[in-house]
Amino acid sequence: MSRSNIIKGIKEVMLMADQASGLRKMQDLKKIKVIAVSGGKGGVGKTNVSLNTAIALGQQGKRVLVLDADLGLANVDVMLGLRVKRNLAHVLSGECELDDIIITGPSNIKIIPATSGSQSMVDLTPSEHAGLIRAFSEMQTQFDILIVDTAAGISDMVLSFTRAAQDVMLVVCDEPTSITDCYALMKLLSRDHGVFKFKVVANMVRSANEGQQLFAKLTKVTDRFLDVALELVAVIPFDENIRKSVRKQQVIVEAFPESPAAQALKGLATKVTSWPIPKQASGHLEFFIEQLLDY
Image 1 (cartoon, helix red, strand yellow):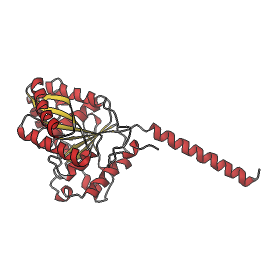
Image 2 (cartoon, one colour):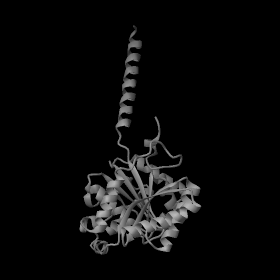
Image 3 (cartoon, one colour):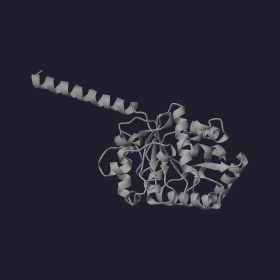
Image 4 (cartoon, one colour):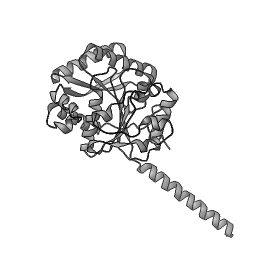
């Protein structure tokens, strides 16, 4: 065998080894769970549910990243009393990467802060939303679960982030406007964006029975007019300790861990860990879409 053929053979073996190594790395990558928390109406406790769930997951040993996706009226950092040096506006301007703006919260959760009072962030184009979603795939920070805390309303920004998640968790309370806005969000997502499954959190209810009744009101109208599947995943009781914890810039699962609302939120976090990650992509842009593609 000539020297050139030997070298060629060695290169082919090395290439096969590199490909096998790359395949092994790809298979070893732990898939990331992505949950969008939304609800339509403001004031239903959406961010409180997001943060308490994230921190309860952190207490269970999960590596959690929270994206404050209310790009124009950020409040995740304020609720936890954290200082922010740089935020998503700096990432979108090209000054830094997502990894550079991460701040650490209670139970070692990581937070990507947005900005507050910036009209330009509210007016991002769909392509800019898509660019931001894709940028998560380039992150070096390791985490198991991404919780996307969306803005109130049914803006393009809310729809972009919500449909890019694997699970959509809707926070609703027993008020006509909350139920109506939640319905409107489901209608848009199912009709225009191919999202048909929703997990519902009945928040600030007086009893478990009231939570079930609230869910029944919602399903009564969706069963009649929408082709969607709803699942009640948590009933969070009204709890004065939530207000006390907010004033202390803490979450209730830390400040009052034995309170009824804290126990319900810890139960929700435990449920989250059992939700499966899809085996294939849905057909539209998603967070970490590469992990859902067959190689």
